[in-house]
Length: 134
Ligand code: CO
Image (cartoon, rainbow, N blue to C red; front, side, top):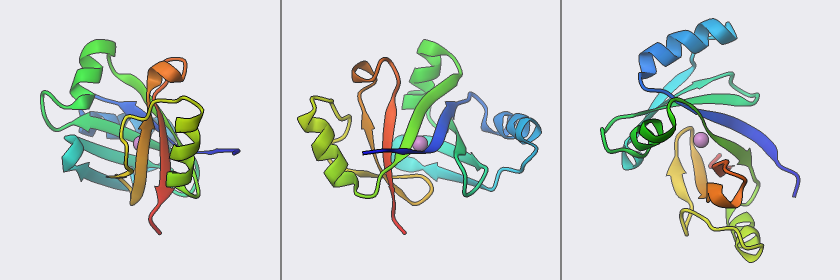
């Protein structure tokens, strides 16, 4: 399957500072912020309708983004690919030997069903599959 990059996720320590920096960089306003409580994450989105930038900050000191920044510092966190049928794609990747970080799709930010593929199976890059919920 040929994938379209839907967004690129970037881990930041401070969401407000990240937003003002990326607004300057991109010359475009953040169009949405959204908390994903289940993931202890707050997100901010840029560039609607094209490949988006998603800033991610931790809302909890032990959250996954806080842990990521602790280990690797701020920066590229994941690349998300839009797929038309996430269940079918998860099945296909499992058969190909990829490890999925969640066995069933979960609700992500921006009205998406998402699933992460283990970065160790993707040359060190965390890959997100996402399907729009309409
Ligand atoms: Co994402």
